[in-house]
Length: 308
Image 1 (cartoon, helix red, strand yellow):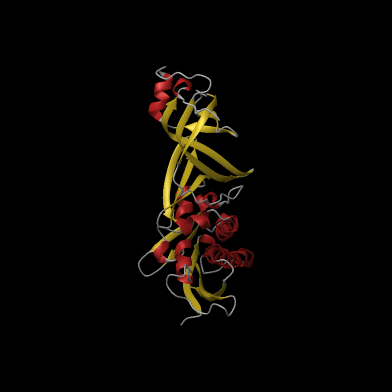
Image 2 (cartoon, rainbow, N blue to C red):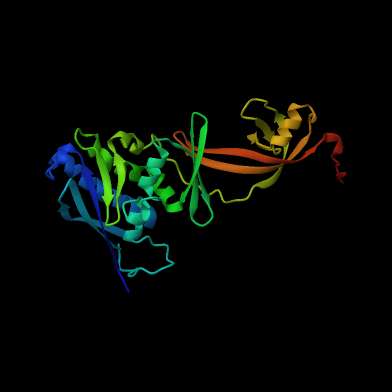
């Protein structure tokens, strides 16, 4: 039975200003507090309030400027008193890996993802099977989708975590401090460089991880108005509420554009409807997408039963 989880890690700042293993207090103190805040925030995101984290300095490493930390994770109360597999608890070493400040997470953790994103904002975070998530980046029409661990995506989407990471990187914005890296017996792994500090600036708003595992629904809609603009958003109604639906069925759109399909008032579309929700700076936004038009039911094909 175990009521505590511990892990050690070391990070190193490097640059001409640090030769002789010296670092000004005004640079060091905020960085130390930021590391502690980062672990605390990450623990809250992954484990809620059930577990607490305490971060201590073990030693200052010689050469460049290295700081060794110990993370001690324990239960906040006496009701739950042990860690065990299958409970969903993220232990101290696992949290370090998800952040990317442990060897196991240098190519999959949060620091890796932020370097991969290169400062781009995510336009969509979509949960996938097996605790993974698909993050979509769209910059000037160049779309890239990255599959990551679902917990890493949750850390990426959390404003408090992102702000803490930025504070850890802040010393690199000082003249003479050029890099932050993780070192173990196998290799030295860069976490951030002076020229990439903008990658770690938190976004203006917090993207929210939403569950989009639901299958598309088959729905019937009447056409309110058609759109032949680039976004192909049609105004449809289910009889009570009009909505804007993005039509992405390429064959259907081609048939419409080439006049192989004609529409009349009262026609009905049978569609495969996706509901997509995302958080924007203005609040929650819901979008609808019809990736398949299953049938175009003309008014003269519709049959009505007599009402008695």
